[in-house]
Structure formats: structure tokens, C-alpha cells
View 1 (cartoon, one colour):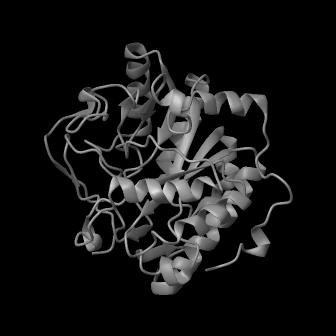
View 2 (cartoon, one colour; view 1 turned 120 degrees about the horizontal axis):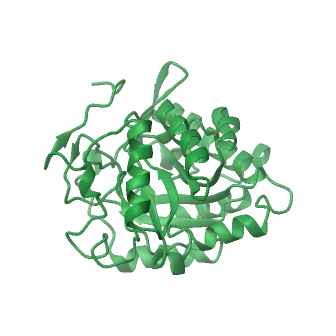
Length: 318
């Protein structure tokens, strides 16, 4: 296993425990178990492009009855997003969090920061939350800070190249496409440096780790150690959905997931209520009818136009 990378180590705590940020976490349904059942979030699907390809991910089809990351009924513009936010708040005053979580990578789309900048003026009371694979995080940390992002989710599935190279097909960075071990090394270097820089700026960071049996299930405790040392606040271990190149892998059982969560809990706080939200989710995650029961989703009906949408994000290689 890889040791904590020296260039990224923090001295003391990387997470400034300010009262303001602590209060925001208390109202964030993806960071707090209590908030999960009391407060809502709205994800606006403004980010279709993605700069990496995970072997467990497919975003080409978006069924309105399907709950998983990368799914949206349609992609909308920043102006449409602002209109959607206004409608949602009028219907559900318990909404506290504005997030961009895809359907691609938030930072690989200029519409993400444009949306947050507009929302900063119009809806300043919403906590702004961004989800990313972390590839562009160090390059864009100033812009992220400028639009008022205070909570940040980074998906980090490995810190060891022997493990990581099995999880990703390719990475596109600064005009070049990388594959194999080199792809993972670039991605992970930026993930860890981005995490460190975000934590030093006072952002509250959740790390999502997709648990893939036979690939990284024995490795996630090491991931927990590394991200905790760099300032992550909480870890969310997510069971893999068998899709794409990993469609043949049997997903972990609840018992297996909880075992890994319990092991990681000795290192870092665990979030155990994840609903694997869609990129267009709206509502209180823990409420009945909002993803908490099989066959139910938080997909906003006023964004639905067709029962099935085929997404072809620009720039994806064939």
C-alpha cells in the first residue's frame, strides 16, 4: 500500500472548525445523519462532460425511475438552473443545499461555476456544494473558492496505483489522454493535492469511495487514512452498481459494506445514509418517496420530458 504522500501532508488539522461551517454541515443531508431526514438539497444537472472514464460508470442512458449518480432526465443551462432552483425553493422551503453533481464531472464544465456565481447573488442563503472526481481540483481551486463553495465531495477510490489502474479506463488532462497506471497517477496526484488545498481554505470535504469487490474492498481503510490526514471530514463508502466494464462483478452485500465502513470508522467519520443520488435530485433524501424506497426517486417532475433520454456528452472518445 502507498504511504501518505509527503508533499500533501498537513500540519495539525487541515479542517478549520469554524462555527459557520459546522452549522452548514449540520444542515447538509449528505454529511449529517440528522440532516438527512430534515433538510433537502437540489442538484442542478448543468455538467454533461466528464474527463475520466471509470470502469463502473455509464452515463449514456437516463431512466426517470433509476437512482444512481450520472443520471438526469435532461441537461439544463445555468439560466434554466436558476429558474429550477427558484421553483424548487417555492415548493420546498427546507432546501438548504445547492449542488452540482453531474451528470459528468462538475469541474469539466464551465456551466458549473457560472451557475454557482449566479446562485451566489440570487440565493445567498443556500450552501453551495460541488461534487468532482478531483482531476481539475488543484487547477480550479481559486475559482471554486470565489463562487463560495463551502462543501466539497471528491470521489477517491484508491491511493495505490496497483489498485487504481484497475478502476479507470482513461483520463483526459490538459489536452492529452492517458491510460493505465499513468492515468491513475495523474488523477490521484490531483485528487490528493486538491483535497489538501480545499481543506486549507476551510471547505468541508466528503470523500466518496466506490467499493468494488475484488478490486479495492481491502484497500479502502488505506484510502481513509490518506484522506483523513489531508483534511477530509467524512467518508462515504458506496457499494458498486454492476455496470459498464464491471457489469460482471457481483455488488457487495450490505454486510460486506458495513464491515468496511466499520473498519474505516476507526480512522474517519462515516456517512451511512447515502442514496446514490441522481444529478437532478431534489428533496429531502431520507423522506419516504424520495429515494428511500425501491423504485422511488428524487427526480423533479417539472424537468422530465421523456421517459428515456440518451446522453452523448461532447468530447467523450468513442
